[in-house]
Image 1 (cartoon, helix red, strand yellow):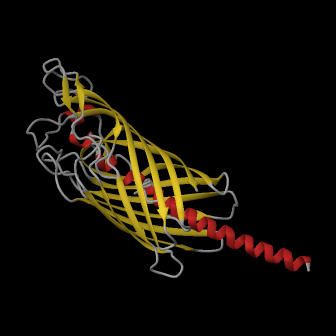
Image 2 (spheres, rainbow, N blue to C red):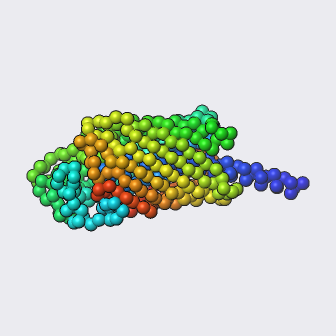
Image 3 (tube, rainbow, N blue to C red):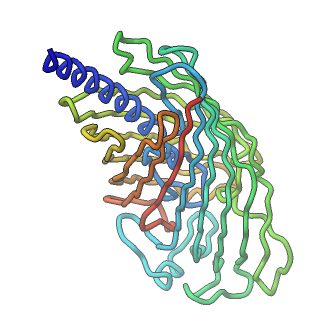
Length: 355
């Protein structure tokens, strides 16, 4: 009798763990899109990719109710790249810029800290809505267009800037009632123009002192309303191994002040090991393709590209209501248009709470 009871308890426990980590897999898949948002920086193709972040930032859920997610993303863009290779600043400074007719602007660094509050509500297992509120803290420095790659020259438009403000808010809906297992879903929503696109920096050019406009791709917001659509699928390879796939497409519906961010496609596939009760390791492959920004106030040369990342991570359950997670993302392949600053890695940490 005890053996039967023990067997029944083990079966119940296995089903619970499987269900729990199917939910976690979906949550991480959604969280991983956070770094995929076009327009996050001037070198928008290389400012990051899915860990998920989106972390696109949907917080997929298997149970109805309210959930909150607080996430920090660190992206240090300190490496100049052109095409598939790194390029030294001196060489980059001699390249022509076909848009301006002069030479390339040489950027020193862009250090990004993104703080995202996600609020998710599910009416049941079929429908849900997610709101992502982004706060951006960014430091940027450029040597301008008249440098030798290391020292700025007069008249080059060089400047330093520090941004600390609200970014563009995303509102996403989801429907995952396409199958009885609720493992196939569609995503749809908007990125709203809530972030400023008129911030200024401090000129370091002695020929033009004072405040100067920050490049449009470095502004906290794009000034545009973007549509976001996508789909996802999750399933199990075995009792303890789950996999998922997600596709997201984002495109600006309008332009603002002669600027329109490039449309982007993000693809994510990942494996989750669910054999541990309180934590789960995960690995993802993240693909990102972004086209050039458009408009007279856009950098039409040094934006867009194709990237592939590998992103190992882990999530841990602190209690039935609280889970924490972390990821490191490392580039596998980068093909960037023009000359862009790219990160050597990105790091993300977050905590989720279910009410």
